[in-house]
Length: 85
Image (cartoon, rainbow, N blue to C red; front, side):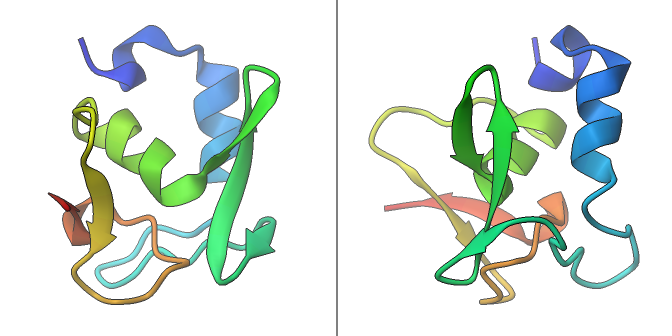
């Protein structure tokens, strides 16, 4: 089951308030560190692009990274996020 189906609407709305969906990159407007977005979730801070991957796509297998096909660290568009090493 994807994260999207398990989360409450409040968490999803809070996450989605930090970017605008478009046909291109969805640029994170919240907290940034080294160009990467950060999102507070369940008492900890997670990278926004990893959260987006889990929210809209699937789990991240152990040992794999979430990479940006667009090479823009602040992008959270799931169509631009791919698993890699």
